[in-house]
Length: 239
Image 1 (cartoon, rainbow, N blue to C red):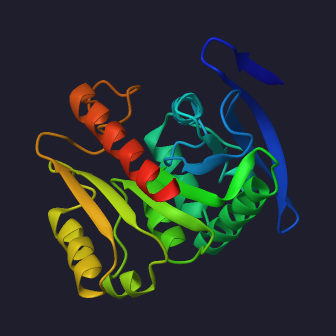
Image 2 (image 1 turned 120 degrees about the vertical axis):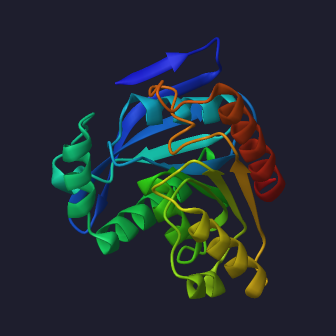
Image 3 (image 1 turned 45 degrees about the vertical axis):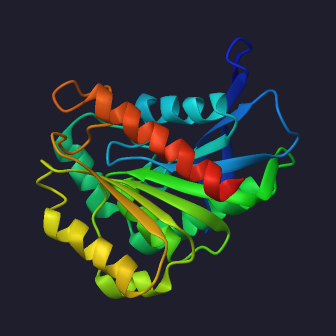
């Protein structure tokens, strides 16, 4: 089923593509106006699954002129979505990092094949678990020209030797899941290996400060600032 919003100038639909013999579902949002081939962004969900919050972010990208594809990385587990932290943790623990990497590569290939996508202007963005996978993608997928990670776990410092695109990282200073030491490791990794990247810390923000469906942690001002910085970064690297 296709959802259209002519006033907003975008349309959405659920799509499917194959990966390792599995059917991967994804939420696709695209602008209805603008260039015939637009830049595109992979949107990687949190441990909750492909929920309405992630779909809303994809719509926001479409309204800003980007094609956005949010793949369901729990497709191999039955397309699960949850609001229960225990179930979310179990789903994340059961997610094979190698399978996720292959599914994200398949999602990139799907985007590149669409006639309304400029295959030379692809980026990736993710939140929490998706932020971690974003940093992994930035070191593995040469099709991606920019990566934006919101409060994802930081890989070992040597990983940054292999970065293939610029990175933007958003961190809440009160986050107890992603520590200050990890963010410092990210900064050192970028500097030591001469890789382009920006790290922004939001002093009063906690983990998931961008998620407006979680009033206990959402910070509207910081979220807006992070969104504006994200669009500026993507414009710079996907233009």
